[in-house]
Image (cartoon, rainbow, N blue to C red; front, side, top):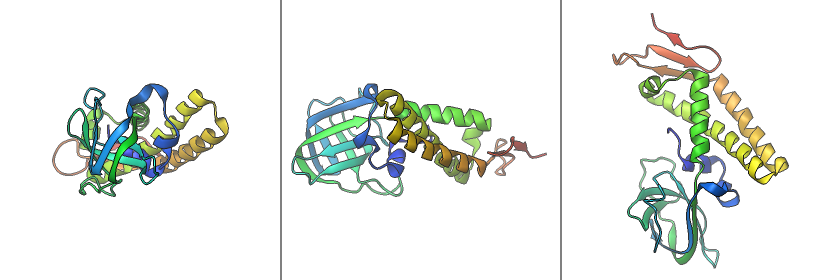
Length: 213
């Protein structure tokens, strides 16, 4: 997928803390240990639970000094992760979170909603796997923004179905649905499907795809 859970966190800082889909949880406990960017929890099963880079770890200490959602940068072992304050660029070094013991921790995911959003958006734009792979860097970045908006709209729709809070969740769903339409209508993607270094196919959100003659 082109997106990660941490991408949703950038737009909705409270998403993983305030809401969760019950059957999409990858682990939780009250025995977390944090030292800078190293997080560990005895007895955890991060590998078997399919935790991966780009997921989100929610942490809270009893004294309240640590209380937030953090980016998972790497899965070191079944019981240890490398974590970071959310970085502006994935290429940046991990940013230390703090130090603490006996931390309450939780890892949930919205990966199914992100996957659905990506499939729906690719269908709408008539993007195949091959054309996705041929997109240039700027096009991937533009498409990623649309996929984040689509994912958040689907996430809040799923939460409405689970929790029934139409007033709060419905308002958020509408915000991201409107954001999605605004982004898509201005979307312009270029792909080099022949491998000659020049874009030969364009995909526009307000029109059908065009090919170079």
